[in-house]
Image 1 (cartoon, rainbow, N blue to C red):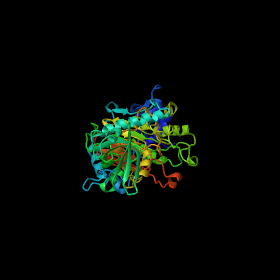
Image 2 (cartoon, rainbow, N blue to C red; image 1 turned 90 degrees about the horizontal axis):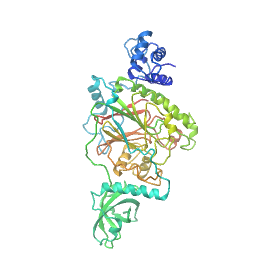
Image 3 (cartoon, rainbow, N blue to C red; image 1 turned 45 degrees about the vertical axis):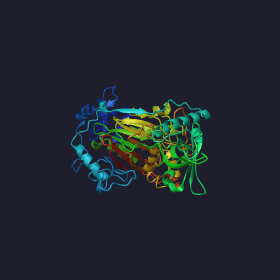
Length: 539
């Protein structure tokens, strides 16, 4: 095979059972005869070695001739393909491609006088250009929280669902009790008419009246109580955002007969507007990707190889973490007639092929993966992090495979990883200006506001009953990372960076039928020290 890229060299070594140091890969890529250099390096390695080191390669090259520096000025030397993503003239300074989202406010509009994302990236790159990056693994810190893999307790019985929703209510209502003078439903029913009252409950019903008002029924552990939102109260914008089964607080005044609460204000659990944000104490980066869909005819393998090639370059040395938010493979039987769009029809073979592509990532990269709705796990959320059989297939670079959702603390930065199936429901239920596929991060804002990644029950998003509701957002993350909708978008909501990372799959016939035009081949790159983000395009 032609060994014209770092990623292909890594893959070739992996096929022989070896990982390799980054500098070793670079040296092999620069050899006049890369294939011969690989054979020599493997011969130079001890029999019990699992990794090809720089020393092994230097020993081999000393015996077999000099290396060629890739990208040298010698016109007689052909340029190797795949050394990085293709760039336009505007990108020739090395700035990543960026389409939207960076440097935005809560409304996702660009700031009037802030620097462009490309300028920020170029300045940041210049700041670190003269300082070689130290990829010392001992400096890394990665912890996983809220991983329910191996802890599922639900049997599907009615009582399991009761426990799930009771836990949801208790934890989310606790976030609201400091803001309103809450009373249980049964206590409010006994209060005299005209009293001021406030109730916290899960939304049991919401509907419009003939007069254009809104009737909201809340349910807590003691019963239900109705609230009427008058159309002249100026709360229509808030009512538009309400989803069934989410936790809500309503303040107002009881009617004379105490049978209904006239609402004056509505409150979501929400995240604080300001807070202390985490950050690494050194310059280090994480790549946030999702929806690889290996096995699909539309998987863009060339873009993936350009991405992994770039990860082997000096420019990408700070990228020490790869966070993958689900749908590693295309799956089987996920949507009608899917088999007609598959390159690989066996689910296990799809994971084996994905593992081969994952081997192209530098071996010393810390990888965290969660499942998605195309993966071989239960569809109901939370989703455990794969069976042992699938885990053994994807046992590459000691990747951490955890549940969907899960919280990952990366050198002090808390990242909430969620595949994002509920985004379909949020986008379908809310007005377009609040949530749309073109701006998926706005739908993510709604989940942050509700402090729950899948608040609505009984619709498109399947929810598994557990003793604990693992879908509640207890702790406010620094970064909220999702995928699923195959659209690229990001922005900040109350100091939380929301990122939907696009995909690695071109448009399928099914996506055409539902009018989805995917953003494929993008890799958001997050600075863990500053939480600045740029995006590289590899298509």
